[in-house]
Image 1 (cartoon, one colour):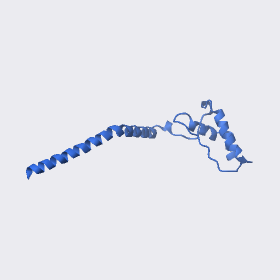
Image 2 (cartoon, rainbow, N blue to C red):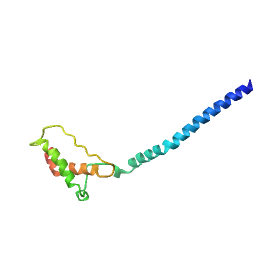
Image 3 (tube, one colour):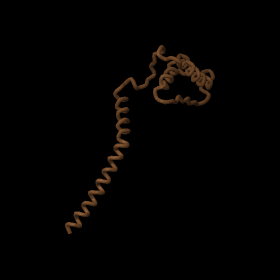
Image 4 (spheres, rainbow, N blue to C red):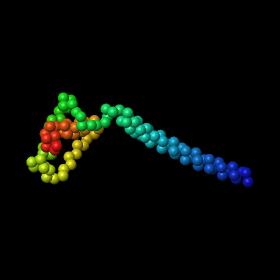
Amino acid sequence: NPIISTCKDAKEVKAIRKELDSVARDHAQFGNILSMLSVTVSQKSLDPSLETGSLIIKEEVIGRDRDRDNILRMLFDSTTNGVQQTFQVISIVGIGGIGKSTLARYVYNDERVRIRFD
């Protein structure tokens, strides 16, 4: 019967439209987040200045001497005559952009670390 078929088709179309509306709402809600993430990832892969390494220019590190010295004290307190007594992990945590990687490089490049752990 064509009338029943048309009614069935109309219900299917209505269900499909409802599903598409749901997908559109989800995209509006999460699409912006995903596009921001992909931009961030692509910026990091394109901008080599965002990559970290161990090279640091000493004159550029300002105000981190106390933090560096505290970390060095923790490192050196666990060694005797240059021999590691215990396995130790020192975490440097904080929000992005406050200098965690810079501090880690500052400690890594310190001459006392090079002598002690060479």
